[in-house]
Amino acid sequence: MRKDLTPPVNSQSSVLWSFSDIQQGLKDHTLTCQHIVEQYLQTIRQKSHLHAFLEVYEDEARQQAQEIDKKRSFGTAGRLAGMVVGIKDVLCYQGHGVQGGSRILEGFHSKFSATAIQRLLDQDAIIIGRQNCDEFAMGSSTENSAFGPTLNAAGISRVPGGSSGGSAVAVQAGMCTASIGSDTGGSVRQPAAFCGVVGLKPTYSRVSRHGLLAYGSSFDCIGPFTHTVEDSALLLEIMAGADDFDSTVSRREVPAYTKALAFDQKVKVAYLKETIDNDGLNKEVKDKTVEKLNFLKAAGHTVEAVDFPLLPYVLPTYYLLTMAEASSNLSRYDGVKYGFRSSQTHDLLSMYKKTRTEGFGEEVKRRIMLGTFVLSASYYDAYYTKAQKMRRLLADATRNILKEYDFIVLPATPTTAFQLGEHADPLEMYLADLFTVQASIAGVPAISIPNGEDSQGLPVGFQIITDLFQEDKLFAFSHYLLGK
Ligand code: GLN
Image 1 (cartoon, rainbow, N blue to C red):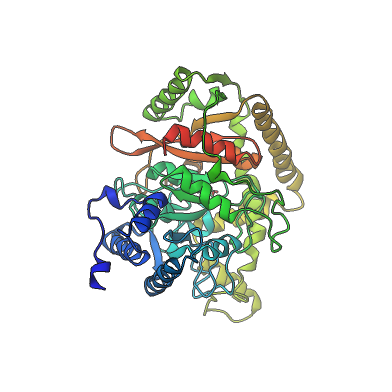
Image 2 (tube, rainbow, N blue to C red):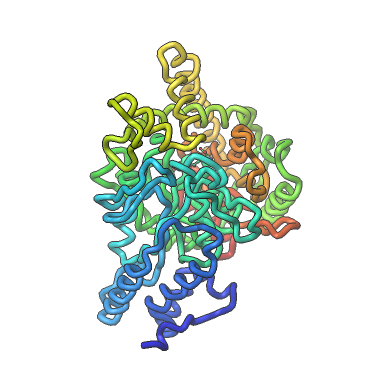
C-alpha cells in the first residue's frame, strides 16, 4: 500500500502531466488514480505560497481516487478517470463552498453542482479544490480577490492574470491536470497567456451557465485551462451541449472534438493591423506574434493584414455592458438570501446597505455603481443603448472578417505578466483586456496557446479566434500550431 503513495516522478517538468500522459501511466500500471492525487496534493502543499487554491478537498479527492481505481479494475470507469480538476471559485459544486472570491458569500455552500461540473464528475473526473479569482470574476490580475492575490509561478512578483488566476497557476505549477474557469472578457485566455498554458473561451451558449455565479450574463462562458489542446478539446466535448437548466444554451449537437484534431489543409488567416501596430503592444510580444505569422506564411498559409478601425471601441463597449449586467446580477447579494450579513444593522435598509458596503470589495462596488448609472432612466439611451448598438457593429465587423478568413490571430495580451500592484489605476487594468474582449463581444470562440517566453522568462500567449461553433476547426489549428 505504502508503495502506491510514492510520487511516480520527482523532476519539476515531468509532473506537468497531460491527460494522455496520465492515461498512458494508468494503462502501463505505472500510475494509479491514488498516485496521481497524492502527487498533486504534494505539489499543492509545496507551492501553497502561490495561493492558487482557496480550499483543497484532500480527503474527498483521495476517496474518489480509490473508488475510481476500483472502477478501473472492473472496466467501468468514465472517460475522465485519472483527470484531476480544480475549479474556479465561481462554479457551484454540490455541498461545497463557493464565494466568487468575495466576502459577501462567506460560509455559503452550494446545494447543487453546475451542469459543466456535474458532467465532469459523471465521467469520473476528480475535483481537487476551488481556486482563487478576482471577486465575482471582475479583474485581470486576481488582485481583486478578497483572499489576497495568486502569484505567477513564472515569477512570484508577477500577477498570474485574471480573473481566473488561481486556475491558471494551478495548471502551470502542476497542481492538477486541468482547471475550469470562466471567461467573460478574457478571464481564461489572459491568465492562460500569462502562465504559459492553453486557455479556451468557447462560443457563447456552447456550455451551460447553470451553476456559474453570474457576472455579465450575455458574455459569460465556462472554459478549461490545460497543458494541451487535446485536453481542452476533451473537456469541452464533455461539458458542452443542451441543458434543461439553462434555456440560453445551444441545442446544437456537440462534435467529437477529440476525433477531429488532424490538420493538413492550407487556411486563410487574418491579423488585425490595429492590434499589431498598437502603441500599447509590448515589443517582445509583438516580435513573438510576428514570428508566428511568418511561420504560418512559410508553411504556405494565406496570412493577410485586415483593418479593424473599431478597435478603440471594444473596451468601452465591453465595460459598459458588463457593468450594467453586473449591477443587476449582483443585486441578489443583499444579506437576506446568502452568506454574509453585517452585524451593524438596525433596520432593513441599513442591513442592505451595510452588508453590501462591508461585503463587496472596491472594484465590485465601482462596477455596481457605474452599471446602475448607465441603466438609470436619464442615461440609459446615452450609454446602455449606444453600447448595445456598438456591440452589434463590432460583432458584425468581426464576423464579416470570419466570412472571408478561417481565423483571426492576435496576441492574447498587450504585455506579459505585470508586477503585482503595477496597475493600481482601474483604467490601466482594463487595458490588459484590449485583445480578448473582441471575441467576447462577438460571442465567437477563441483560444490562447503558449507562444514562447519573453527575455525575462515570462510566457507569451497567441490568440486564435474563429466563427461561431467552429471549435473543431479552432482545436485542429491550435493543435497544429502548438504541436500538442
Ligand atoms: N478583466 C475583465 C473584467 O474585469 C474580464 C473578466 C472576465 O472575463 N471575467 O471584466
